[in-house]
Image (tube, rainbow, N blue to C red):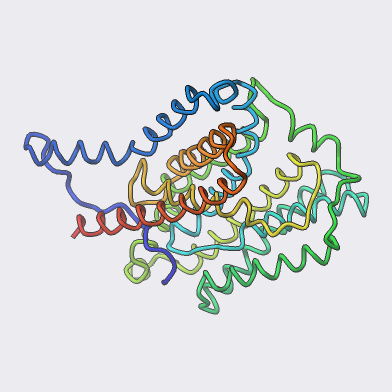
Length: 345
């Protein structure tokens, strides 16, 4: 186990007594930790709502709809990233899986005249199949997950380049799929509802099912988990498969939003997703990867980048901000993970 340093089951320790000063201090600190990211999101959103350079366009229904629609694929990929991270593994290929799914679905419709349902199913199942291979490499052949999935991402990038010839696939894409990607319902893009459904299901799985709780246990202490009879390899393998399936859905949604498939490596959505997942580990349940915190992290990154763009920031600001957010998030989540571990001893 050599992948990431923050994840795992919540420590089974008693909370400090509420009646003591130390207990009250502990409760206040915990409250501040859990809600700091949300408070920062509100502050940043408020700032760009009144800042002269962005105030006119930032807090408008049109901008918020575009922002949420564009970030839906990032949010969904962040949820996919979350599954291996919970069990202390890292999947660097999920962005490439999404890009490959986009290209396959577009190619089947454009070049082979496949019906929409088949193109969608193929894209999603391809993601699951690649996730299965990743899980096999990590659990059966004991490869380092970072190295294995980085290699898979590189391989998939080459496959996408070969399949597309470096060209964009824009003809023959189903109008129904494109309409779904651009349409709204109750004022929100339809793709947002897909994210909400997946997030709700994933939250329930991680928090309220034995499978989800065992992933946290594996992340906390894999050796102890095995001694307790937890099928660690099987569950970790399944987490890679589920992450791949979600990444396949991301690819289909990306096609619906853009109306075409490019020879993209997927890194443009992977790094914001990673930043959101690690930022999420600093909120709601600090020190532990969690669904709600991850969604807050997505909103924080997207709101910040949108505000900076509207304020007239240069094009280089977005990647710099995403990289800085990822570095800060990894540092904070690692610190909180170590802090919780010490508190549990």
